[in-house]
Every structure is written in C-alpha cells, then in structure tokens.
Image (cartoon, rainbow, N blue to C red; front, side, top):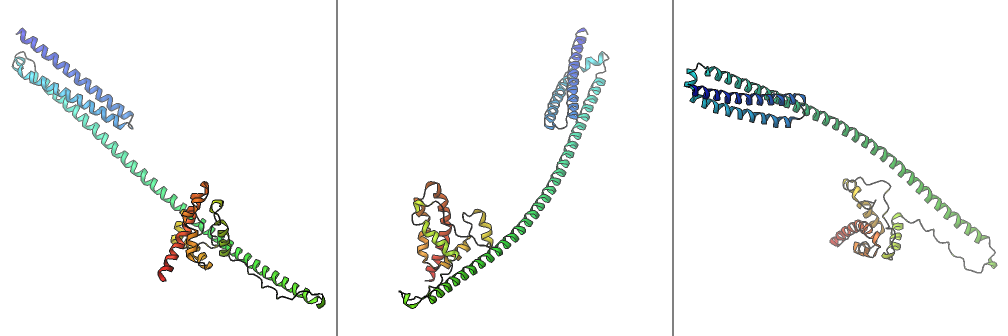
Length: 319
C-alpha cells in the first residue's frame, strides 16, 4: 500500500507539473492575446505568437494524454484509495474545453479585425481612385483650355505675320516702282548731246525670294563643305501647324520643327531634281561634320532624306 501511495503521489506530482505547464501555456497565450489587443497593427507577429501558444497547448495536451495513459494503468489503485480520479479527469477536460473556447474566440476576433481592415483598405483605395480620376479630369480640362488658348494665339500670330509679310511685299513693290520712275524721269530730263550711252530698258524688279528658295540657298551654302558646318539649315516651320494625326503625334519625337508634310511641300515648290536633293541630305554625308554636331545633324538630315526618298520612289515608280 505504501508503494501504491508513493506511486500515486508521483503520478499526482507529474499531473501537477503537467497542469502547471498548461497554466503557463495559458498565461503565455493570454499575454500574447493582450499584446495583440494593445498592438493590433502587428498582426503577423501576433499570428506567430498565437501559433507558438497553440503549439505549446498542443504539447500540453500531448503531455495530458500521456498522463491519462499512465492514470489508466493505476486507476484501480487510485479507486482503492478513494481518490476521485474521474473528477480530476473531468475537471481537466473542462479546462481543456475552456481553453479551446478561448482560442476559438481569439481566432474569431482576429478574423473579424482582419475583415474590418480589408474593408477599410477597400474604401480607402476607392476614395483614392475617385480623387485621382477627378484630378486627371481637371488636368485634362486645364490642358485642353491651354491648347485652345495657344492655338488661338498661334492663329492670331500667323494672321499678324501674314499681314506683315503682305505689307512688306507691297512696300517692296512700291519702292521698286518708285525707283524705276525716278530713273526714267532722270533719263528723260538729260540733254541728248550729253548722253554718251545707249538707253536701256530698266530691269524688271526681281520678286522677293520665297521661303523655300531662301531655305535652299542656306542649304547650298551649308552643304558646300560638311566639315565646316556649325548650324543645320532647318526647313522653315509653317505659320499654321499641320493638324494631321501622324504629324501631331510625332512632333515630340522629331528633331525638326517642320513636319513631313511641310518638308514635302517645300521640296515640291523648289522643282529641283529629287535625286540631287536625296544625295545632299543622305545621312552618310554628315560623317565629315564635327563630333559635337555629327549625331544631331544626321538625325535632322535623316528626316528630310526619308521624305525626299519616298518622293523619289513615287516619281520613279510613276516613270
């Protein structure tokens, strides 16, 4: 009987140790839960602590199961001594159920907080998207108004430029006519015997050069020696920009201000052999240029060359 009591005491001591470990695990788990409530933003760390607490609880359950197996072996002896082993077992099971309920409640609260956080993020994302959409619409409206104002100013500037050009041409024509009249009057007032030369018909006034002709004059002067070029003879940009979709879309990526349509119009108005123009603007000819200008000149020449080459191909195909 003494041996049985000792064995029973040893079993009770083991059971108390197991129960102490279970209570320690429970205290650790409750501390982790309280830390989670105090710091809800650290969800991932709390999940790891919760998993650790659950592992400890599982370990405690495993120890309890081992104790139950041992208690089964000494159940008959425990009943003889009047110990209510079944009561203790029921109490342990009740405690385990309470712990499980507590764990389930914490998990439910965690899932609820995660759902609330997700809904809050969704609302914030939606509000941010709406604000960005409104900002984009406002920017587009500002850009559209700016484009309209700029287009209006450009048209007004073009009209003023055309008026100035027309006035300058009229002034030039009047000056030429006045000079011709003055020369004719001076010759008519001279005495015939003082005149030692044969009268000549005054030359016809030379009309002012067109923008295309002035541009090609600059091209010939610049291309006379590629190695001495300092500036590229850019084709003059039109007073009214081209509205074709391709020209508008390619404007930010072009090296020249003039679009392909304007270059083709200038080349056509010159009525020069396209083969000559094609050779003059071939990018390979600009390898003689200075290093600091070579790449930029080749890019600009390539844009003119592509237009002239396409025109040359069409002309050759028609011929």
